[in-house]
Length: 265
Figure 1: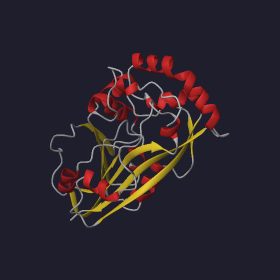
Figure 2: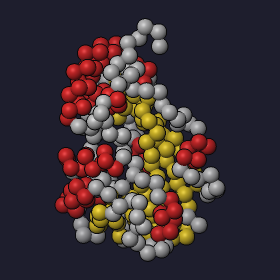
Figure 3: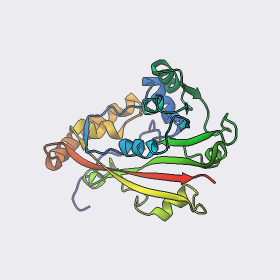
Figure 4: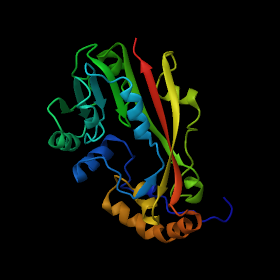
């Protein structure tokens, strides 16, 4: 790392909540009632969400029953309402579910507050397609409620880099897992014994618009107290680093995602 300055590590702040933990989602749901990124950026297309939607659409027809696990505030789920027989979204955060039900386009889609650690309230072999978009990976339960030959899909964030972690040491740490080590990914999601599956690494290119967006992305879902400390301790250095490395579109980063598709037995 040489003489490069190490920035303040916001993860050492006593109020830091691990992202995507239940406590983190609860705080997010209470504060804003939806899962939307608050930072400004531009994405190169296709985005990970676009790729996921394209993969899902291959298995959707007028007689399809779909379950979205970890549906958030329902924005992604809504697109299947007019294309499938039945669409259900579940999430552990009640604030997300309230928002999803409030804005749903039709009564053919419903949203339920369900705890992911409990048995899902659906009969065996009920759904044709079960997917999760950055939600919990519940393969055993998903397999139980999916028809034989049905499809189970998961999209999972594998970290952000593309130079970001090297440019902002301290604020960001090296990725703990190589996103291209698919055997390790299979092990992490307990899929070693599965044979009828595909894993795809998606490299989603994003351009963060301003120095503040670096901090907003890092502190997404955290308390206002922690954000204030991060801005006070880091913003000046972040501005200098951003100005040295940004393009005309912004600071380029790469979001790694793993797209998993399984055909149920």
